[in-house]
Length: 178
Image 1 (spheres, rainbow, N blue to C red):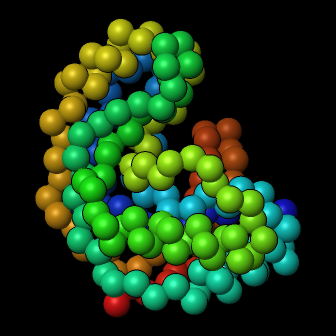
Image 2: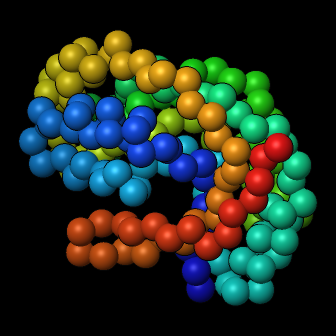
């Protein structure tokens, strides 16, 4: 079994700007630079044959290079169940088409449909039982986040491995966007 997801890498210069915002939340597990990405499709734990099928289907995707911008911050969960803070991605029709194409590729590979609404973001930290007022203050302090535009010319298939320091990601395959 291998844990996989399709994603866009956040360029290091954009990621370094995000790292400067990673403070002010006690107990937050801040994500390192190499872990910053925009998920297109989370596949989860897959058997090797299904992983191969998913890879083959992703390889059929043709899409245009993207110009993206990060804008604003937010959180997942409510109250004491808040479990992550993130940087948002400015609305982008081409990004939505690519995410939909990755979802379709997953379905053709036999994965179940994702019923959640796609919300493009970069996870900045995972949280365990944070004080909601602290999260609200962090969001208020960082809500004007805006990155310069950045160009994305490929997306990747990443594996995820749990370590004592959290998840570590490895690029398994890269697919061009032209």
